[in-house]
Length: 143
Image (cartoon, rainbow, N blue to C red; front, side):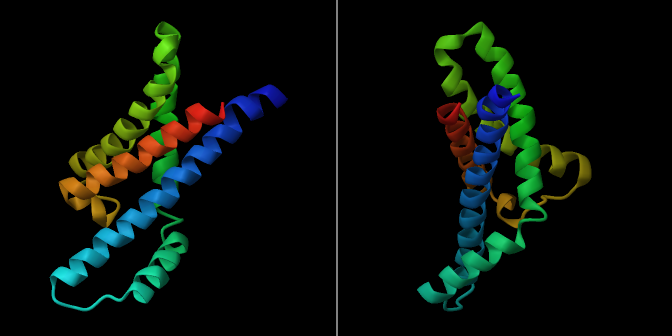
């Protein structure tokens, strides 16, 4: 049991946390960039304040979505990693990226909603994918 916790559960929780924090921070900055594009001023203080508020405010939506995406992606990566152990770590990074991007694309195509405002643009979707990749890297490194 201890091996399972240290080898799978704790690394997974760290990966989800890392992907969530980066995804939330990037999402906030994408939204604030849109505000600036509308001609409204956004100070550094407001950026920091909004970022911290969003870290708490997106817990109920973004955190579970990232956890679901990474769980599905890491299962696939683990199975593929058995076939190619030499690239196992890279598979988790790729799986994290693909899993997060796929989740939001699937939500959009099946439910007609984005689930998180920043993924409405290709760059925002890419940024959230990069957060998933970070989660994959954290998972691979902490196992």
